[in-house]
Amino acid sequence: MKIQVLGSGCPTCKNLYQLTQTAVKELKIDAEVEYSTDISKIIELGVMVSPVMTIDGKVALTGAHTLEKIKEVIKENQK
Amino acid sequence: MDIFYPIQILANSIISTDSYLGSALNFFIYDVIKIGILLIVINYLMAIIRYYLPVEKIRDFLTKRKWYGLDYLLASLFGTITPFCSCSSIPLFVGFLSAGIPLGVTLSFLITSPLINEASIAIFIGLFGLKITLEYIIAGVLIGTFGGFILGKLNLENYIDESLQKIISKPQKYSSEKGENKPFLSLLHHFWQEGFGLTKKILPYVLLGVGLGAIIHGYVPMDFFEKYLKINSWWGVPAATILAVPLYSNAVAVIPIMEVLVSKGVSLGTALAFMMATVGLSLPEALILKKAMKKKLLISFFTVVTIGIITIGYLLNL
Image 1 (cartoon, helix red, strand yellow):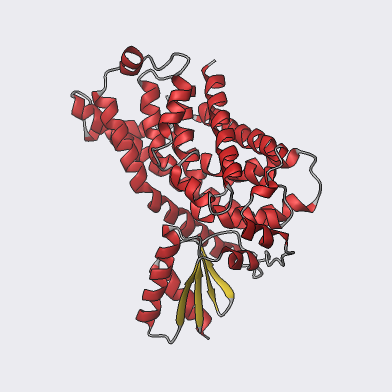
Image 2: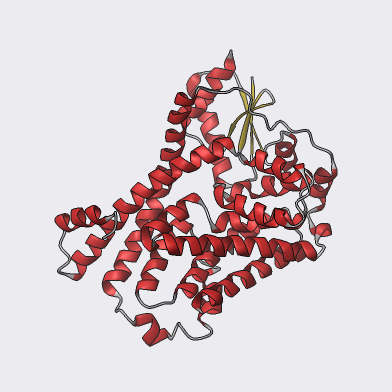
C-alpha cells in the first residue's frame, strides 16, 4: 500500500506526516509513506484543504487528526 | 440579569473579588467556564453546517450561475463559516480559481476566513454579547466583500505565481460528492467528536488569552490607555492596526485581551482594528501566500485589507 501526505508545508501538514509514519510503524504494515508539498497534486484530487492523506491514490483523510484516527483509516483501507 | 448569571455565582463561590488577585482569578474562572460552554455549543453547530456545506460545495455553488457582483458578498459570508487554517489557504486559493471563480471573489473569501470563524464568534458572544458580535461579523464580512471587489477591479490575474497559473488554466475534474449517506444518529456522534475535538484544540489559547486579560483586568488602572496613551485620538485606529501586524496570534487569544482593552476605556473600533489586524495581517500568513502570489498581488492584498480594517475601526468609533 502506498500512503501519501500532501501539504503546503505548514506545521499541521508535517505533523500529519509524522503521525502517519508512527501509525504505519505501530500497525506493522508494509506501507510506503511519502510526503509531498506539491500543491498541484492536492488540486488534482479536487480537494481544497491541506493537509491531505491519500492511500493508493485515493483521498483518505483531510485536515489534522489524532494518531488513533489515522490508524483507523489505514486499517479500513487495508482490506 | 443575563443567562450566564449562574456561572458568576459559581465563580464567586470559588473565589471572592475582594483583592486584586481575587478579582483577577474570579474574572478568569467566570470567563473560561462561559467561553468553554459557548465553544462547545457553537463548534457543534458549525460541525453540522460544515458537513452539509463543505468548501467543495461552496465552490460549486459559486460557479453554478452568474451572480452579478453578489458573489463577493456570498464568498465573504462563506468565509465566516469555514474553519481557517493557514495551511489550507493555498489549496483553497488555487481550487477556487481553477473552478473559474474570479480572483476578486476568491480573495473576498480569503480575507474573511481568518477574520471570523466559529471560535471567534463563540468568544465574542461570551465577552461582548450578541449585539457587538453582530457588529463584528458585519464588519468582517464588509471588509471581505469590498476588499475582494476592489482587488478584483485591479486586474491582478497576471500576478499569480506562474506554476500555479498553469494548474489553474488546466480544466479540473472534481470529486466533490462524498458519496455514502450515513444514518443521522451516527452523524450526531460525528458532529460531537468534531466539535469537541476543535474545542479541545483551541482551549489552551482561550486560557492564555483570558489569563492575560485577567492580569490586565486586575492590575492595569482603569483609565490607563486613555490617560497615558491618549489612544482614543484620531491616530488610535491606524496605530492599533499597524502595531498588531508583528503580533501573530490566534483570534481566540486576542479577543479576551481586546475585551479588557475595551473595559479599560479603549474604544471598540480601535480594539476591533487591533484584533482583526492581529489575525488578518500576519507575517506567517504573508509568507504562505507568497508561494501563490507575486509581490504586486501580495502587497495589494495586504494594503486593501489594512485600509479595510482601519476604515471599519473609524466607522465603529463614530
